[in-house]
Image (tube, rainbow, N blue to C red):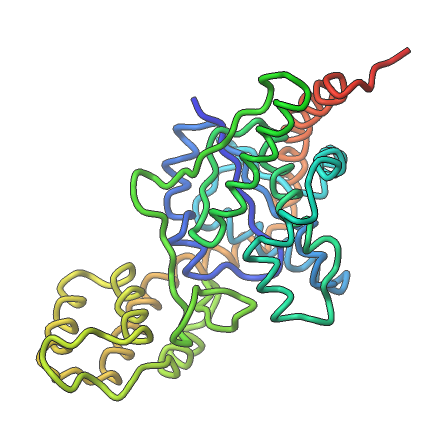
Length: 329
């Protein structure tokens, strides 16, 4: 049985990209593997959230995880900051992570471009903290989206470097858990890139039907095809990609045929896409609201999850300290 670790930043609501990128597979995955699912609230501090926002976001994301099918009776579900051993392993890994390799990461370069007034040290060492989250449970597999593949490769590098430096075969080098298919990347509604909260181009699982309709109808398209067989532009291809995961295949085929014959009406396509997204998200949204109102259940989940996660993490940290040379007198 493989050990699988997956986390998501506590920066608010989950969107369709999160769901189809991995969450829809978690129900099956958690029954077949030893799974650790956590809310990455340390990672969220790079954006300097207010205390009340931080707590509210943690609670929201936890409820959404559970509503999507994560079972705390089967998997270990916990909050990152409830496991202080992660912070110590992060420190130890940082001693052997080099500035040059961290500066070359795609995510760091993007942050420099997008938020030049907040280039903090944690953004630079973000991949190291991610590696600590993963290897502290000696994970073999990590479900990642395409945008995180580089971070996973760096996790493998840090694990390999530790093993070579201390001449041990301690940390496994985790591989991507892509469920036997290509890693999924759900695009946003703005015509380019992935769907994400910070990009402001996402449809969230808690969005009301009215919010979904408004967002989808504003989605970027183009002026339409001018000749049969013309390849769709990136914005239009993005809409087809989303439709392919929320709509039935007859619907997808209908609009593809309309596009191929230059008869497509983007307004009609958007209305159908909005209806299909609403149909998909409504049951999840209702479950999220039910869970959010049950404070006793949420408290029980995080308390039991922290206990199980710390049991695993503390064992790893004791052994790592021994390997490095920190031994009792």
